[in-house]
Image (tube, rainbow, N blue to C red; front, side, top):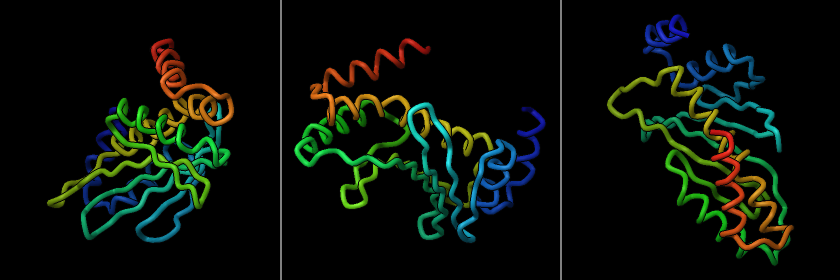
Length: 168
């Protein structure tokens, strides 16, 4: 791991998406370089397959991560799903969930600001992806419980929290 750190530190002149590609290769993630400023991959979790996209924005010098999975809750459960999202986001510090109803997608979003010519490190990129997958795995059962199990959002969040504490 130390060798990898030195390798990434010495590549500070890499475009952020080139760095993501290098990390994806190192982690054996299946990826597709969508364009010069974007890369997409699929990461398998316990509950879902997660579509992870990282994109570089020159205008605000931000490496953006979107981690998505399909979710089609009944229309009647949307109010409790949004309440559950608010509770989950209150507990999350490194990103946030949104539900994109038109696309029927649950989305975890995070932006790494690299203003002033700052360079990302490989460990940061790996941690961004890992945190996105962990958030999906942690909260997916709670979202399912409120949408299809009739559980109150606060009760469903307790299950997500108990699971997290159980793995620590």
